[in-house]
Length: 319
Image 1 (cartoon, rainbow, N blue to C red):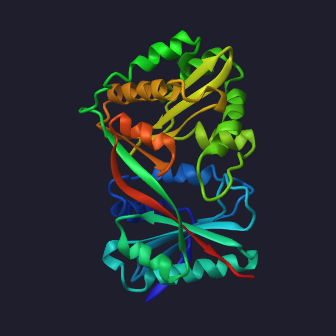
Image 2 (spheres, rainbow, N blue to C red):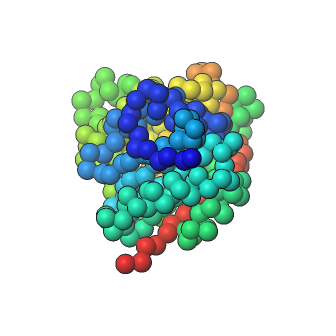
């Protein structure tokens, strides 16, 4: 018998959540501390829920749902269902899906979004069967740090320096610039909305922004690099370590103000990040970009190799 239960945030439930998640996504594991930090810092004005499916006294599936934190569209919700591989193809995922949709009904959702990886045919079929349509493909790529060769791209440093732009770590700026957070927020207000997404990006209030970007067990200020010109932050590239896997580092976000693009700034920032990752002892960096985003082409120039893409699906709800 399958029972769907609300997540109560106990240690036992967090461990079960992490175990299910990590056996499915073994190449990008998360620790209990990482998962709990995400919950503890969720946006107070945004819905977030989680349910567990229990079979014979054992948790076998997890369902997350809520409102995307940085999305501006009202009535937009996400779902993410994970079923332990030993219990897949038994209808459990469908039961969790139905339970979540019943929870969302009183909110009159307009759009429900979900994502899965392009090499998981059964997950794609699950979503398509329930009326979801593919809206965007996010190209994933990985850099082998041992094999990395700059191939002349290091000249971007000279170009950036000659233009009067300095590159600092966020750790340096936190100790020398009392307005570092306000300046990063101002930078992201311009740059983040240019990132290709299926819904317009809207930054949260600055207090929540700091929690989202610059806190948690994976935040290392020395792994974030900022291009500065005359006190203004004009470029940024940040890495996030993994508490549960020291061999891989993730690129969180890279971008440059519109007025400063195509001047080698992002290349220089990414090279700084690569050097940090090598010094940190990581074996690879992984990142994701919408497949037509010029940033993806820059990553390929740097030597990143394509991995299975993430697919973004949407289901329009008729009212």
